[in-house]
Structure formats: C-alpha cells, structure tokens
Length: 335
Image (cartoon, rainbow, N blue to C red; front, side):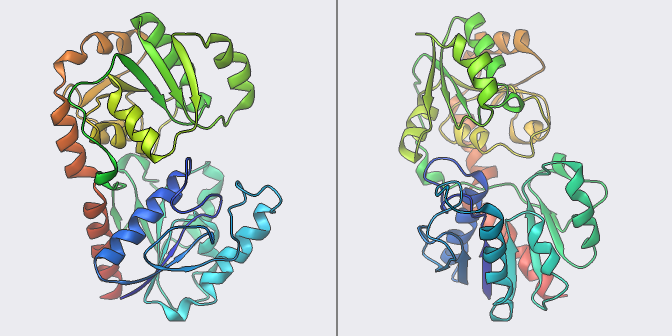
C-alpha cells in the first residue's frame, strides 16, 4: 500500500517544541513505516522521518517569518495533489483546504479532523461529506452535520515518556498560553493549593499573558517558556498533577495523554473530550471550577500513578492509533 501523509507546514514534522498536528502526523507516518507500508511524508524539508520526504520549503512559516503562509500552504497542498496518482491513499492532516482537490483526483483522501477553528469552516467539510472520508479524534468533537468513517484517538510514542512513581512537589500547566486553555485558572488553583506551579507553553495570546498572567508570576508561579521532548518528559513525569482547566470543548489534548503516560494524573475541567481521556478518580479528576480543582489537588494521594500509565498505554499508543488508521485505509480501498 502506497500512502501519502500530508502534514501541516507551520512547523517541522515532528515539531521541535510546539506543533500538535505535526506531532500526530509524524507518529502516524513513522508507525505506518514500521508496518511495512510505502509511505511518503509531505512536510517541511527539515522534517525527520523514516519515510520518503517531499517538501516545497525547508522550514515552516512559523519558523521562517519571511515566508507567506498562504503561498506556502498553496504550494504544499498542490505538491501532493499533483502526485496523487502515485499513491493508493492520501492521509490529510492539514484541515479543510486539501478537500477542495478531492473531486479532481482519483486517489481517495482520508482526513483527520483535528478540531474546528470555528463553525465557519463547516461548509467545506459538508460539501465533500459524501465523496471523502473523515476521522474524528474524539467522540466529543464530532459535528452532527458530518459523516465519519471512525474515531481514532491520537497516539503517542510511549518510549518518549518515562514512568515516574515518586513525583516532585509541584503542579504543571502545559499548553498554549491562551484564555481557552485556562492558564489563569491554573494559577488560581496552585495559589489556593499552596503548591508550586510551572507554566510551559507557547504564548499565543500576548495581551492575555502581559495583563493577566505575567503580573502573577512569582517564586511560586514560574513561566518556563517552551519545552522540547526531553524537557517535556522530565517536567510531566516530575509533576504531582497536570492542571488542564480548559475554557472550551477541546477535541483531544495531547498533554493530557502525555502526562498520564508518565504516571501523572490530570485535573481537568469536564469539557469536550476530557471524559474520554481521563478516568475520573482513577487517572485524574474531572472538575468544574477552581474550588473543585483545589479539592482534587488535596486528594491526589487517592490516584495510583501506575493506573495512569497503563491506561494511557492502552488507549493512546502510537501502535494502537496506526493500526486503527490501517483498518480505515483497508475499508476505504475495499469498497
């Protein structure tokens, strides 16, 4: 089977620090290669892969600010579509734009919908609802207007995460610095719990960071910037818990699965996909507000870290994800 994997092109695949869609595209690609498939990855030229690599730019447009994002995206998508006849299937991780080519080529396209930036993009998905194939990354993120081939949870390379039985005495916020991610609530939880908090992630909302986060930084509340794979593993494994007080219905949340792989329980607001990722009172706590989260911090001793680790391996491994996608490919090609 000849598979083309279309990764986003904002960052390297896999990303050096931030880039969740690129990370999943990388995990899919490498897993398919391990299965023995003939895989070509369409990504930035500095990407790292065991597959064949085709690119139209050395760096992503968020890494090289001299690039025009729309131009690079246009060239990137057309690169795979003009080669469509070379593949049995195209696996799209690049949102809705590639769908506009789907009726112009004979090669079937399977699209992993990594979330909806807004309802405004739904008409594109709806237009190609009956001529292409959609995969959801959680049941919670399914749009009622669309037909889905399957739900496939994002999978991680479990070897990149170290199980830690005895953590240090700090809490961790790991994600974009944005109102949607609840950084301020994480600070309030740590302050009321009288616990150290490390904040790690890309500052996406600079006004939010400058006016609501930065003034509250202290010896107790520290912002560490971005973290690469090794530092991420170290911080996640050493934490008492990952705080995930989201203010939106999150489609998945890679850091939630990553934390549990390290044995670290997650305290999350009960929204979006969180009930699918977290076993309440077994691998973490699903709560509704700061006060309930503080209570959860005080009850972390009830959680067995090994349960977090084994649950995450079973549900969110790269191998399970890739096998589920391979089944999807077979179902499409057998029609």
